[in-house]
Amino acid sequence: CVLIKYNANLTLEWRQLHPNSVTTLTSLLSIKQTADGGFIYTGELANVASMVKTDAQGVIEWRRLFNNNIVLAHDVVVLPNQGGYAATVWQPNLDVIHLYRLDTLGRTLWNINLKDSLTNTTFSFAHLNISQDGNLVIGTTKRTWSLHTTLGIGLSKHHINDGRVLWEQ
Image (cartoon, rainbow, N blue to C red):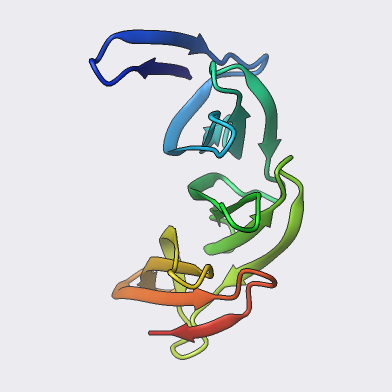
């Protein structure tokens, strides 16, 4: 993976290559700037979901690899009021999206499986955002697990402290 930062005039500020001893990041799905001026990004590294935090110059501070056959880290948000991050990652062998709440060093505070309790469907992709009241809002593509048929779009709101569902549609 190569991170490149340009200034407002589109002049190159820096370029960082992020190699890995096994392989390089095969997909980068989300990148956000952090409160300290660094960056956090998610993607796939050798068929394992990966999250990387860099400093303001793009130098890696830490890397988080998710276990248990979790392949793709979809989205990440920076939590300005609480500190730390939230991320959605996909576990294809169970066809489940996980919602993780992480501290500033990438350690898990809690995680939950996203399943729609109303229709017993799973999700194949998830976008993550922060609501005005500081909780997590997730937009998903809903599909049946057994038929792999897309059913539509799902939207859910989760409490920032423990991930419990506040509402879902």
